[in-house]
Image 1: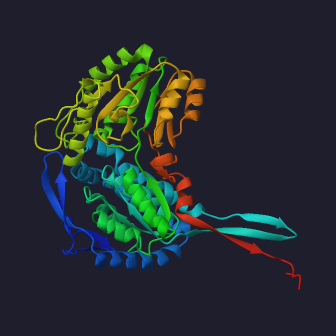
Image 2 (image 1 turned 60 degrees about the horizontal axis):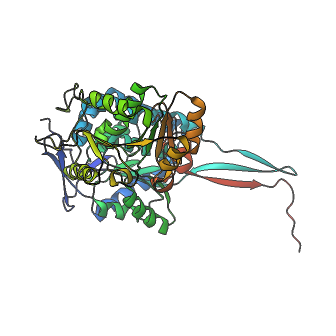
Image 3 (image 1 turned 180 degrees about the horizontal axis):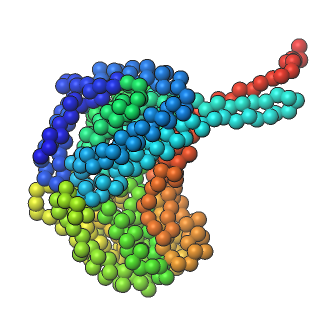
Length: 485
């Protein structure tokens, strides 16, 4: 196997930095269970070094014009595209996702974000507001300072770029803490940004477990925290940040509904259900894991779904023919298998899959449950694995009420050939990222984020600019100022 051990654990001030006093972090290749690298968690000394480097770089970066900043981001996007295969191979080792998938969905998505926000960077202007009598107010959009990005383990390259791109476009610096499970990819993004011309210290990578994350979140030199992760982690991080009046963006979990009416294009609806449950082995926060199927097409849907799942190619993630890979961690595999057991115990019908595959690594077959009811654990709780719950419904009002009966509100989708109904139903779904006759597409041009417990703030699109900058207003008086005495 290629040597995947990075030069050092952290990337700070434009260079690799090591501190072996930090707890060891073993990087495990999910397809085999093999340890492919060992890193060390960030200590308090590493955190201080990163915050100092970011603060110094941010002042230099903010003094540049937006167009100059954009030029660096565009160069970084181009470098990522040139190295897509190399970065995709690394992503596959980090996550276990099939190379067939990482080649088109990971580094390329990161490049899209850097390109989009690089293009916006020169356009971030304020406005002129006349207030009468010749006076006016003008506004200025200013960076927040040093931003902290905390990544999840399912999309390490993409998440690093989704957070860095708008932050840097607005004139901020960033410290990025990857998940300890998938720590390798962000280091390559840090290298590429330096090569593209970013000041040393503008984008730093600090590895670590929750303890390192808490040191960073609580550091007075951090102005904003952006987390992608679970709802429990989000609540902890948001509470810590709120205590210090820091800005936050929280992109958290979901239990999203995918509603399929009986007039839907069946093949397209099944494709969406497969993508929304089994892409990345089901490890996607916005997955449509509650699939509501109108009763008239239920059996046809299940039969064709099982038939298509039988053609899934489960094998070596490095083989581009493979389209379903292992779970990223042994712990997550055991969680998913535990939910399969709960589904059976609570009376759902296991149509197909849900079995552990006896081989090295963290493998299971994609599971489909039918006859699922709203109160079952598999219908209420986020599994973050390849377990689909199919629920019956009869009418529109009923399915909308049931779809919204959840603490989550990240995504939602509807399949129907009645476009009036499609817009009507989506208009009533309480979720931040919604789809009609497709599912889980996340172009950088569109906002992405959740409602309710699924988070606050938005990533991507022009909306993200609002979360990485603040507006200063300046009142300009052109006449005399008077007082009562």
